[in-house]
Image (tube, rainbow, N blue to C red; front, top):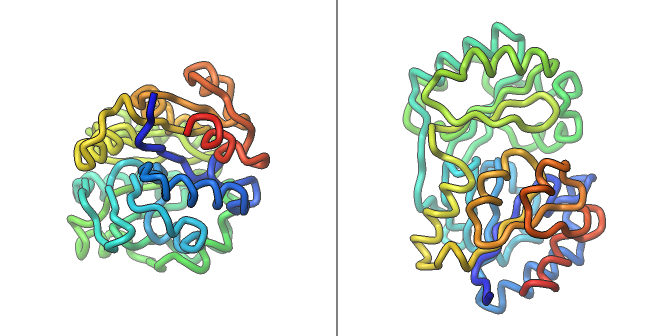
Amino acid sequence: MNYKLLALDMDGTVLNSEKKISPKTADAISELSKKKVAVVLSTGRGLAELADYKTELKSIHYGILVSGGMIYDFFNSKPVITHPLDAEIVLKLIDGAEIENAMIQLLTETASVTREEDILNMETFGMGIYQDMYYRNCVRCNDFRKFVSENSEKILKFNIYHRSTESRETNFKRFENFDLKIDYAEKTALEITPKNISKASGLKELCKFLKIDIAETVAVGDAENDIEILKTAGFSVAMGNASEKIKKIAEFVTADNDNDGVAKVIEKFF
């Protein structure tokens, strides 16, 4: 198959365990982009959370961001498609997060929004490795309800970082009958987007926009929030550091993220 699009997850895939992009992986992505292959990001991250990687990823034109909540054109600095959450549902999510004394993160088209206090205590929520990035790139907010009222049509994703897996499960059950797409992520997190919005739906939308057949796509990932896109793409690849559940559904398993698994996919299939 002459593949025309490569969709890459970020954390655990393009990024190594130190949350960096190795020179080999960055070079492989850049060289593939020169071959007129659409290399796209497929990530739960929002635009603000990609700011640290502008240099390494400057050859990437499009991104499926905030877990499918936005298709973004990096070259022209604008969203192509967005799918905001319903503001009334967001307020209910805030209630549930506060009952569990959890960390809230709101993602808009351009911003990552959270509390200063939670940034300073991210280790408590199993997110310590991200603390420096959040400290530098997040907008601080102490009144989420006011923020929602002022940005009612701009919130694309709602992340909740809990203090334990038990607390996460409590909130999953609290929200499971809401009209939402809810994924487990990180150690104790829930990633929440509008119903039927996912990395997979984003891939379909981007393929339609670029006039690429879904069969001509390759997706690479490592976590449960990659399952749908791996099942949707023409060819699926699991990272060597992925769980056995992810490896079982993939058609190929590459090296892990500390050994340039993405670069090896590019070498082998493109």
